[in-house]
Length: 125
Image (cartoon, rainbow, N blue to C red; front, side, top):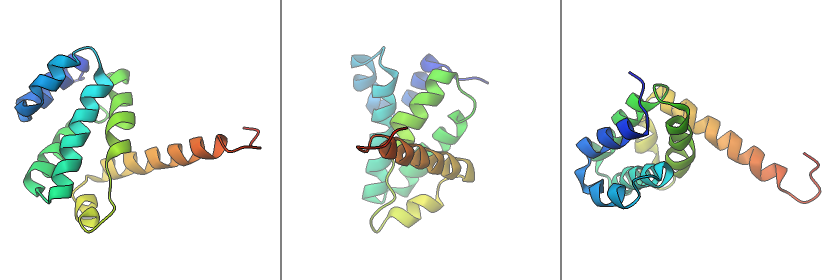
């Protein structure tokens, strides 16, 4: 199964119907919808709602690597980039990620560090 943007929306809304209004309002904005999914995930982590957090993680794992390039990009840029592992619940949240999501998150962090370094004054990259 390869998930496109429409499949992503349908799959996420089946699991999290509370996102329906936001998804409808931003129907053509995949990154905004992915950001809303990230906010649900991050909120569950922050609140220690591990059942909901694990539902989010399962869905992200299902999508990762089985999506069209636009959805894969949105997963990296608008989902993984916004998942936080700081604070008291951070280690528990990290442990609940699959190895593949951990690897993808680390890769996103390396990319962000390289991007930040390339923007420093005097850097000729």
